[in-house]
Image (tube, rainbow, N blue to C red; front, side, top):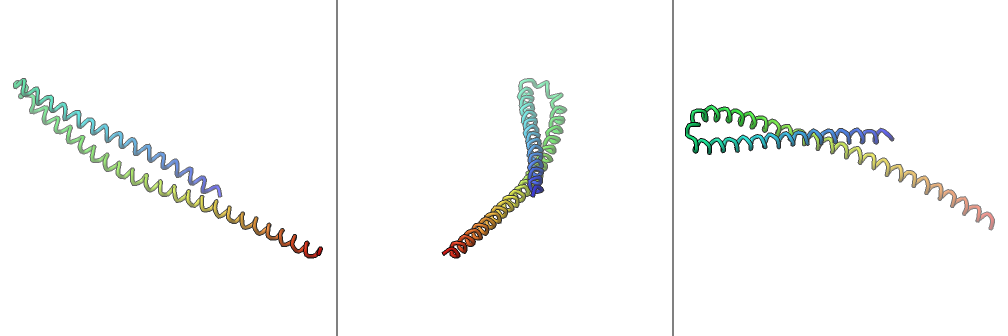
Length: 140
């Protein structure tokens, strides 16, 4: 039954595509976390500079508001990507489970064919043995 082999190949390609998607989403998550860390580091540097240069206080308020907006936007993106990663993992699990079902069905089919072949072979050998036994008895 070639259709199971075809289904298995198709399912493997779906699993591979889902793995690629999951990897891309995880990379996006790492990138967002890196951007958040960079923004936090930058904010810390600006705070240290403000202590050294009090005249920067005039523009620090605007900078801080903009920084908080960017941080909020990054946090929202991060939550969205985390949600997408969860969905992608679930989908990958489902696809992999389906692939395994097809592979087990294929394995069971092969085992059944082998068992049937063994039964036929045993039956044929039994027949040959019976015919040989009957012939040897007739000769005596």
